Length: 592
Image (cartoon, rainbow, N blue to C red; front, side):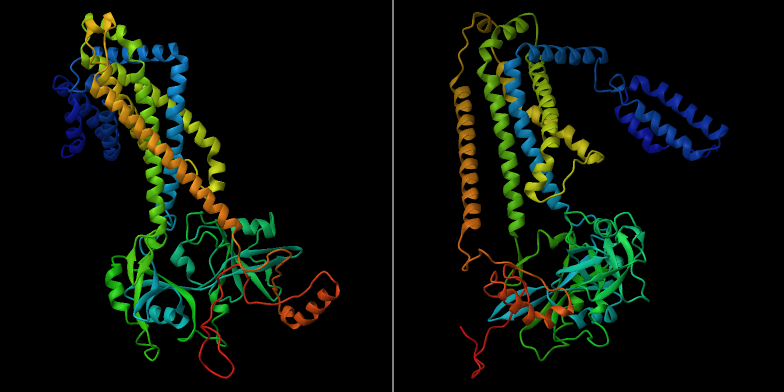
């Protein structure tokens, strides 16, 4: 026991802030408590935790070495806030305008901050966020390099079997997943999901609320999201039960996973069906069909750049007879959302990142408009504070004390404004989510959130209150009492610059808002090249659809309500379909 000492880091931390006059007494008491716990209870870890707790307990003003007189300091702070509170209540109209203006700017800044945080934290819900990569390919087209995510299905199998030292998992999904028609009894829905490799859970680490991931021995299985399971099976446990897909295949539910958040690449994945149902013995994976996307989980310690260098020729060496195939690329999950734009094979700043920067600037400008409004209002009423300043200076107040007083007022305004801003944000957050297509929530349980709040309030109080504090405290006491103070040229020019900046930013934001509104209005009303009225779309989700298509077409036309009917692989208003051009019957040259 004698060899066990109090935690040295805790001792150093204590001596860092503790007054020297208290050090000997405090350390003696803490050592006594430490050794008593150690000897009587025999709990070494507990003794150290108690020691740390006692050290933190001394983080109080009376113990700080840099405070000359605790009682005077606390009294001064309390006095400043009491005076500031009385001034705030006395000038209710002025205080309401100040608090309301600051609160409006803060609420917009908080909403924009939440949106930016949601964008920057995209995909971070996945456990292996820093190790998941997507495989891309470079194609040469007329001297230009194009980066594409569509892959031949055989490549996923090849990477998994050939590079076990690089990847823990290689998973494939169908390149163009579509809505499928799901039916359970009388309940049916059309939802979007993925055809994924059976080992997808090793990649994404889904959070299961019932059942588990795919059983390798079962072929006709499906995983459901929690919301879709609720829709199809209501309150029943869906695990082990069957459902019909497109009225053609029955699948058994293997597990139910929690819905993925909105800021996930796979947020629309309401179900997962094994891609092995597509790539089987009758229809094996091949080197000539670019219809899959490939994702991989790097082994711990494997660098993306190093792995990319090893696999870059994996596609070209297997389809060497196909011209224009260049190297393979790997892009990490952290870059999928904001940093995945390529130009001539080189990463460039994405439009999403540009939008984030623009919105960030807008948030800063709106907040500064609120600060400028606060500064101008406080400096404009300097005449009403002259006598107060003159009296306080004449009875011995230093300029430093007056600055502290005015900063205390600004701090009270900032706290009141921030509380009001939080109320506004909580009230309008749902509407903002609907407008932005997000599922943002206030991170009340995050320590970083509360640290940011404290920093935000202090910075806002200082930025908004610094100039009024230094300006008002600079008055000559004699002239202040006589009321003969005139604002200098420098002060007047500074306020004029602030007003000019305020109006410039306001006008720019108004013009930008009108421009965006007109662009959206034009996008909604622009001609699309065909008459959209009276057009309807039906999706065939069964084998009988193709067999009876001509019969259905003729019967619908006989009703007189349908003029004509045509079929297509994809709906008219999406870009899922593609081809390499049309050719004449007499020549192989494509139309221009």
